[in-house]
Length: 262
Image (cartoon, rainbow, N blue to C red; front, side):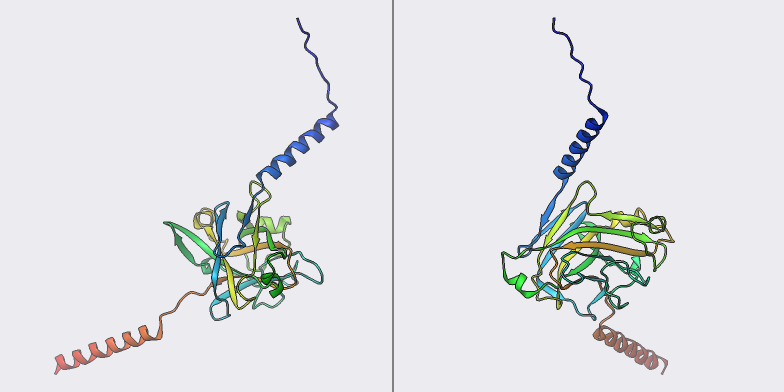
């Protein structure tokens, strides 16, 4: 009969082994979504990413910019989040026209394949050389987190104060170290490049009356000096022709009432 052999493993070695296994699992769960080809799309953690092939206009009259970030100096990494607080914490543009608070109610809802999403616009502004050179490194979205907060000027990201005043709605890295490979294909900042749509249920299930402000944090690597901008589409107002039609209808009804009274 074979004797059972007991092996005593030192606690330090066991701890190291568990760390290696944990790290291996984390790497195995990592996913990179490649959206560099024309018209590419895909999803991670309930978020839909879609490249806009022809590029929609991205002027101030068309979209509501709420976060603009740009890598400082020779750095190729840039990060930031929208807030009314000053001074800003990372690589955000200081102008309140481009980095500001955003009401949750101002984020438009779209229906995709029978499901509602809150939709955001991403406009990349990388140098033309990167767009034209297929071998140039692509910009990478390494981190995307979205929160609902109870004030327009929260600051101290990754601190207890920020966490106590917000509820996290979305995390690109939930379940693994995920990323999205992107490319500026629409002539710099004149036209936006991507739509990012987050399942509306993630917001509705966590919305409370005090959490009326939306915070979006993003981090990019392989940036080459241009700015990246997050925005929402402006809500449409009645067209002038529609208002004119209503005025004409009102005038006609008033004319008929006068005729009847005579």
